Length: 99
Image (tube, rainbow, N blue to C red; front, side, top):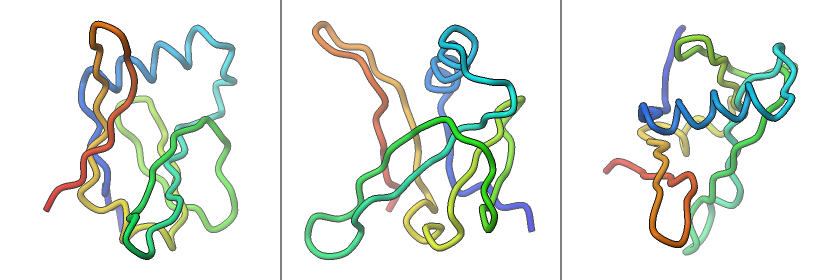
């Protein structure tokens, strides 16, 4: 089953690819999307990192970018959008969860 639970905006994808190309990330590494928390009132927090495929991971590709996540975290990742925003005093990735 080829499921793409996460949407990545064009600007976020461009920033991820820039980081991969300019920060010495090995070519075999992909983008890992991680969920922390998820229970209780605080909800889930999301993190990004570069990693290799691990046993039991789910994966798919957006263009040339492999994306990895743990199967048990799928429920939290469905409908997630990763965007990148630049403001006057800050810049970074933003995680938006659909209804």
